[in-house]
Amino acid sequence: MSSEEAFAGAVKGTIDWTVDAIKRFVIKLKDKKLAFIQDEETINLVKEQYHSSELSFYKEYVSDKEVLFIVNMGLTLRKLQSNSDRRTNLRNKIFDKYEVNGLHIAQFVENGILNRYVGILIDNMSSITDFKDKIIYVLKNIEKHVLFVKKEDNERSVIQHVTPSIASNSPLIYIISGKSSAAEIVRKCEDRLVQLLSDYTLEKISSNEMENLFFKRVIPKE
Amino acid sequence: MERLSLKEISSNSKIELLRELGYDSDGEFVLESGKKLLDRYLDIPIKLDNMVILPGSIIILDNNELSLSKYIEEFGDVF
Image (cartoon, rainbow over all chains, first blue to last red; front, top):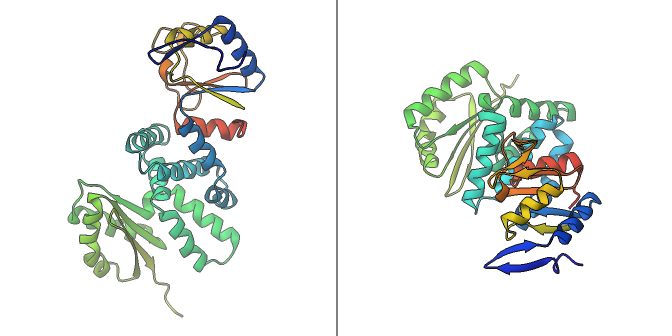
């Protein structure tokens, strides 16, 4: 009997299986020939992401498996941009498992910031080892390198956060990132931040939905 | 591998399936030895209406991208 034939007594969209069908399904499951899923979309998304070129790239350069998995979750969040319920659900799951640091790593990836960050690192790369170390360092110390502006923030709170953080950590690159209504707050801070961060040059990645300010430390010439 | 959606399957049939696999349900959650079975990657109770049952010594998970990605990472892309 096929799986289709086992769907006996379908009433108002609720399908009952016969006892025989259930026994056959269990045999197939144990033989690894069958999986019970909920929806194809979730499985297909997870599969697609697992085999994606972008994840393959990061597999080469992110040696920490847990961090790499969170990178994968960030890429998955990006794919869920048009499905806010599933995106919110996944964000909550990431937060529950990896706390705020993990969620920020995922956001860093989701918003395309990691890709640009890697590009800047490549421009200044001295060796592959150094490159790998810098990627893992920024991901593990995300709070020292990125400020994710929230809709509740304002120009004053952003400036008050950024200046001491840069003064104490002196990062090679510091990013201020805002999405939706927070993007406007980031835009309003730009001029003041450029004045305050005179040792840094600014590069922007902007869209209607997002504003990312990359402040890159100027290396003094000898 | 054949994939069978549980979305349109009656609760009774899903419970029968769980019993055949050595589990049970109180009608809302998946139970193992009378206690709520937890998703192995998220430590959250698994709802009957949102469970997936996957091969690999029979793995029952909550249907979400994180748990399924962890499963693929552990067992490979078996789908």
